[in-house]
Image 1 (spheres, rainbow, N blue to C red):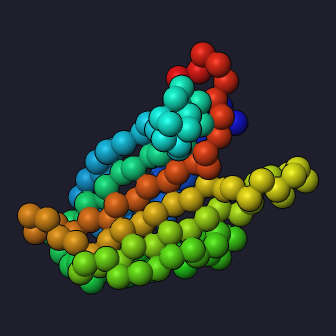
Image 2: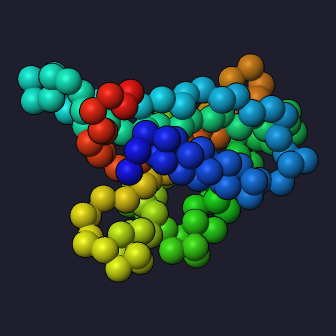
Length: 152
C-alpha cells in the first residue's frame, strides 16, 4: 500500500457513503481532512514511517432535517454498509447523538493473500446541531502501513 492508494481508497469510501444520502437533504459538504499521520509514537518510530491516511467530511443537512432525522440517515447508512459486507464494530451514544464504527470486508482475504488482520474503517457521527443545522461527520481511515523511503 502507498500513501496515494490509501488516500484514494479513503476518499472513495467517504464519497460512497455521501452518495447514499438523498441529495435533497444536503445543504452543503465540508471537506475537513485528507492527510496522513503517524501510527506510532516518536519513541517507537522516530521517522514516522508507519502511517495511516484519514479522510473526513461533514455533511450538513437542510434546515428541515432535525437531529433525530440526521440519526435516521445514520441508521440508513449503517444498515447499507452492513448489507455490503462491512462489520459493525461499535455503535454507541455520543452526547445527544451516536457514533458508529464499521470495518470493510478484508480485502487481503478476498484477494487470496495472507490476512494481516487490518482493514479500512469508517466512522459516522451524528445527532448534533450547530447553528440550527444538523450534520453527520463521516470519516474513513486506512490500516497502518509502512511507507517507502522518501514517500511522504
